[in-house]
Image (cartoon, rainbow, N blue to C red; front, side, top):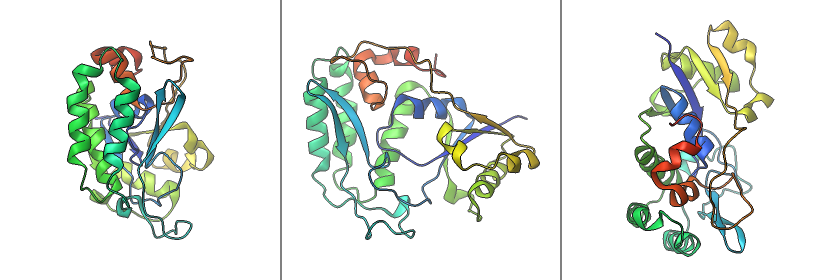
Amino acid sequence: MPKKVAILQSNYIPWKGYFDIIASVDEFIFYDEMQYTKNDWRNRNKIKTQNGLQWLTIPCETKGSVSNEQKICNTKVTNKIWTNKHWNSIQNAYAKAPYFKENQDWVKAIYKSLENEDYLCKINYRFIYAICDYLGIKTKLSFCQDYGLIEGKTERLVDLVQKAGGTEYLSGPAAKDYIDENLFKEAGIKLTWMDYSGYPEYSQLFPPFEHGVTILDLIFNTGKDARKYMKEIK
C-alpha cells in the first residue's frame, strides 16, 4: 500500500508551507537528531507589525560557534522570560486582527505552559501539535529517534523512509542541493518535491503582503478559513 513520508527538523511556530508538507504525507518524522544551526528557523520566526516584520527568537545555548555535537534535540533555552516577551509581541501585533480574540486563549495557554520548558524541540513540538489540531491535520507525527539513524545524508533519509514503511518521500526544495536522487531510485522509493509557489494572498493587517511569516498570522487573520489559503488542506 502506498505511503508518503516527509522528514524535517522542528521549527518554531512555522510558516504555512511547513504545515502543508505535514498535511501532504501519511507520516511526518521530526529530524531533530541533526546539528543545531544558529540564526535559523529552529528557534525563531517572523510576525507582521505596524512597523514591519519582527523576529521572535527563543534564546538558546550555543557551544562555541555551534559544534557538530550540539543536536537540535539537546539544545536548551537560556532565558525563561522569552514566553512573556513573545506573547506580548504577538498580542500587540494582532490584537486588531479579525480572529485574534477567538484564538488568543489557546495560543496564550501554550506560551504559559512552556514557561519552565528547557528544551527547544519540545517547545516546537507543542506548537506544531496544537496547530495541526486546529487545522484538522491528522498526519502521524513521529521522531527519527524512534527508528535509529545510519550514516550518510541521503542514505539516512532513505533508511528512515524504509523503516517507516514508506514508498514515497516528499522533500522541501532546499534539499535539492544535497540529496542524491539515485539512492532513492535504487531503493524503489519515489522522490517528490514540495512546491511552495502559487499561494493565494489573504487580508493582512499591515501591507505589503508577506507569505514568509508564522502561520499564526494566517490563523489570526482568517480563523478556520486558514485552510482555504493552504495547498493541501481544503
